[in-house]
Image (cartoon, rainbow, N blue to C red):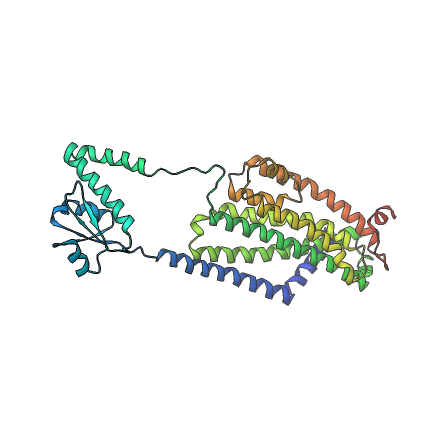
Length: 388
């Protein structure tokens, strides 16, 4: 354990001293906070959008409707004279309401705005007046409620779903961080393994430490560096959400632990096998042959989680795929963002990941110790497994 700790500390410190890692982390955090500022500006712009109230002239005969019209949002101006003279003399008027309150007449110039709104409100006001006059105030509220229910019919579209931007933001952010940390982790781990092998530093290290211990230390050290990056990103996300005013809509107490768990499990699952495969090559030019398939393997669940799960969070396919360890870190957090994820599903998915990790680590450790000292052409995986 002491050897594992020393190797992990060396890798962790090496990553924290990397200028490229520090700069990229800071830049990404700044971009996240900037996104929060942009979100605040856009949300405030929508909130400041004012609805211009319509202005209507009302003659003495229709004045009993004035209170109801004003309660509905119209600006009422007392008017006298003929409709033509009133509308021509006051350009601020959108329409004129005259005649009896129980049977009002609306006059408007050609091309008048808000005419549909004025007509609807006037019809409601006239109905209110007639019911009050005939049945009294007690029956008015019940009658108007019944009329409102009849007028506000809406078709229900089967299979439709309301888009929640906060849900989509949480899902996109979580799955993007999982994917980003996986790609970063396997790239750094593969590069480190090949660099030590090319420079023959690994031969010196293996004189005092077992191969699997060396691989485990590198794996853990890089994992701790990744968790440090995620901590910075999470802090930036909280700041951005606070600036944008979205923090009350996100359950931080649930979201942050879920984010850390799936980032960690995603990195462990994909990186545990990458370290062993990287030992089969001896040149930096061949790293792509190792990391390429692993990146492609992570892209498949990433796209599945982003383009299928949001519309089908409770489908049978989503539930089954969510239990596959290579898919779980992507699918499960997106499901949790769009539906009430059963605790049993979450426990099963995490349990299967924890069962898979030792198997992958054992396979990677066997490949690593049997190919790390091999030089020259790339060693085939089956050859590494058969060799002593």
